[in-house]
Length: 155
Image (cartoon, rainbow, N blue to C red; front, side, top):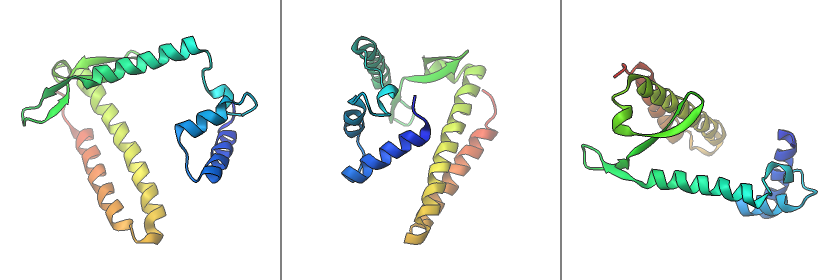
């Protein structure tokens, strides 16, 4: 497996050569057995095919929608990690189960922290371009949402 520095170097070179990155560009590079990226990918088509079908199954599960009380559509199933195993549960079941509810709220907090970090990057990098205000507003809104989740009472 290549180091994160090796991966970053190859991706930087690809970005410089192409002006951007796409999965197709990265995969074309990784197909070369001499590329540091080659070992990151599964080249056994039987295994890779199975992984792709699992991804398709996840997409299929997510495609089923129900109507929220306000009339807007939402996924019927939610992904939740229980006992180191990720599975999908009906939202209507999760909201009634205190333990599952707590897990979902914790996962949402982690996701919001990741969004906060991305926004902070935009704030820091956008400061020189006069784009700081919008990013700061988003940052406050996300922080407020995360704080409300942190303080949410159990079911």
